[in-house]
Length: 295
Image 1 (tube, rainbow, N blue to C red):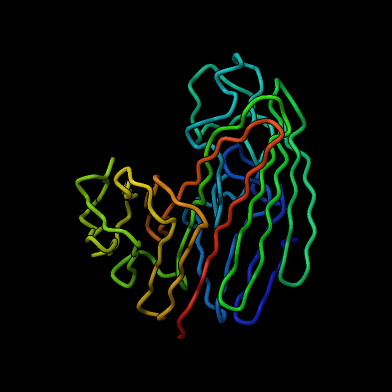
Image 2 (cartoon, rainbow, N blue to C red; image 1 turned 90 degrees about the vertical axis):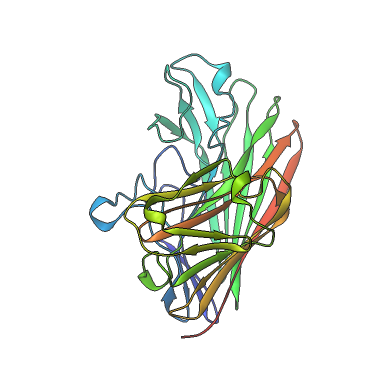
């Protein structure tokens, strides 16, 4: 059964490792699959109902390590094992690494503990080929939001160098993407500096302050490189006019990689945290989500 964390108007549904999701992309080590504010749902799912497969596709706030930089992949041959933080060990194939491939998995060991408003998840990879990690994720509910805290220790003899981001599947009150939503950032957006723009049906309206949604679309949309290569505050805010609710994320770090992806009923602003951890060292970071407004 999933864990329920609650504090005043905020309630989270949190799943433990392998409870439903068991694929080789997203972190298994504790996942916020739904957040509610005064009973209003704030999160959605990657696929529409008739395509949903909870063992494979993302839901809620599903983070991932190394979407492009797979640790140790190039150091092994086809059939060898490389590590994916938050999952364990994946068996390499003969092709270049691709995050959407279904790799064979040998999972890390996982532990968990929880109270009324706080859950802690621990993962230990063991060691192979000089790579090993210990990873703690802590999720805590507050009266006006919640925090996700991470601590990653390099328990091996080789460096751990990659990045982490959260695939935020945001959807307020089940309302699909459209004019009721607006997404803002604390820096000036310049579309000319984006590395990629996919704007089907002209659904996205980009301004210096953020991204609006002129209309709905059944096609996937994407804006890549919103920071223009600059280091900027790791922050965004999504407002929903129909409910008056807004949800924001703020990391305790700066990022030079910020993107927006979306499809039909969800939008995902993504803020990347990059790290390089020497053997015996560790790194910690935090993402804090705040919610406000009333029906």
